Length: 276
Image (cartoon, rainbow, N blue to C red):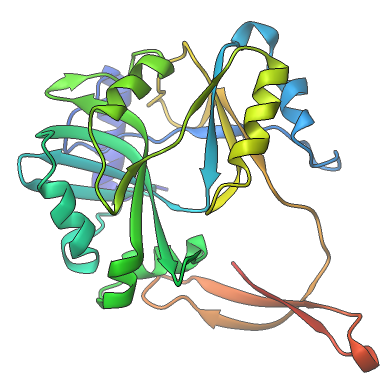
């Protein structure tokens, strides 16, 4: 459920089918390409995307915390996917100052936040725990990267109804900084081309798969799952034991779980790492 104030804004945006800078809007979710029990392989995308949806845009599915980031002049505001305000000025002042100083004076984007430490991205839950908390960490600030995926508004214009490939062209005009990036996006004319692009984006740093978007479809602010987006995740089912759990610092009722599987020397468990 959305934060109460954000829910009112999102409902107004959906009712009017209009995006305004500094008014929260629903962020659509992509449809799953793999049904439970089916093989987890990129070819599943070719089976679920109708031929009349091509050309499509193929983007990496980043393991990030979803954000709406809006800018007007030097005023920069951000919301989580659940509509909670995110204090970038305090928790991520480096990227906040970079966005403030960008040449583009006004925009609203659907974006995601990642934190890289020693070249490796933290998990989404750790990023969310930090950005939903209150304690500043200079190392997390230096490692913060925000990547814009979709353009909602630009220079006082609502552009969310534009076809995806046109909106992406507009997104490129927003510009980039050291810590604020535009997502890589590749156009694919048919299923074979799409699968080739998926193989490229699923192995990019910080990527957990791919998102495929119908090129001529607009960005939906109606809420729920988009009928023109599909996702593929680099994952497989694995039965594991939960051997420990730790609270996500600063987050509300969130936990990281430590998993392990049998098979180590002497029958010991082999740790798998943390999940949430």
